[in-house]
Image (cartoon, rainbow, N blue to C red; front, side, top):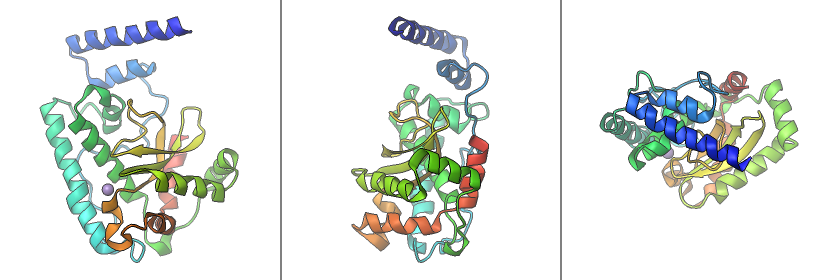
Length: 252
Ligand code: MN
């Protein structure tokens, strides 16, 4: 088994070098590295463009859970900076964004600079994060299919919440907590540091992010200050289950 792994790794390295020499795109190399030539196990459910999309609601829409000033600064300063810096990095590192999707870029992020890693992650994570929230009065609940999966993989919705909150509270410094869908179609709760996510080849935990929470202080400090647990508990009342249910349906 070890020898097989070794030879596979050697093949990928060799193929990677040959691919670079032949001018193959990152997506081809990514497919080869994943061992799924031509088709990934899980394709992008809702690929996000490289440019920042408009926020799907007003800055004040998530009040009182997330205040308008936090949303405005978060979207127009922090998230905008990730998008801008990502554009600089893809230009400098010659990524053909017409051919390589953001998800494909993340899957081969180890081949790029730390600037690419931080900003590709930052842009993807925030693009997803905005969609995961809705006005407090609009939240519904997990679909029948997602409820079944949650019960199977966590025991109950309450158990999932406890595990998720604990991962979000326990992330030291800045980062994210996620519910991910792994290759074996099981749900799991993990957290990642900084702007990493579980689509990245360098991430210890791997899978498609189903939903996640930004626990950088910029996401909550104006209203919650040092009380990160209060922000995390309150966040459940702006969670956009309709979007998550749809995303789950496309991933599974
Ligand atoms: Mn953020």
